[in-house]
Every structure is written in structure tokens, then in C-alpha cells.
Image (cartoon, rainbow, N blue to C red; front, side):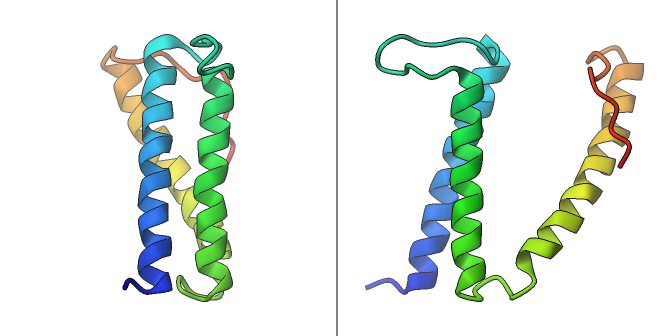
Length: 108
């Protein structure tokens, strides 16, 4: 029998995989694409739903202090750092002609 921690970590991995799949669908087909009656939501909605599923599991881990009592605050600070790093590497990709500039300005 697995522990509660193992169960929640497995769910986090599962949801992260679904988020990755939603990202790839949106990348390949666009955010507004809808795939018919089996998938009535747009890729943007699917992406938002999967992101929220990941955050929900992280909150469950945090609530049980499996990731530390300050997990969400740490994640917020670390996510800002990740944004800075991503912006740095995006500038490199833009300069090399591999991607276009963002449509927003990240002032963080």
C-alpha cells in the first residue's frame, strides 16, 4: 500500500504530464483550436484547467506540510525567478531568429 505522500506525488506527476500535453497541443494547433464534441473546450481552456489541476495538487501537498509550510510563497518567488530566466533565454532565441518577441512586457 502506498502512503498518502506517494499517492499525491503520483497525482502531481500525472497532472504535470497532462499539462505538458495541453501545452504541446496549444503549441501545435493554437490556443483557440477546438477538437470537436469529444473535446469541446479550446486548447486555452484545456491549458488553464490542467494548470489549475497541478496547482490544486501542490496545495494539497502544502496543506499536509509534505512540501513545507511555506511552499506556496516559495513557489511564487521561484516562479518569478523562472520568468526572469525564461525572458533571458527568449532574448537569445529572438536574437538568433528562432522565436518572435512576446506580445506582452514582463516587468518582473
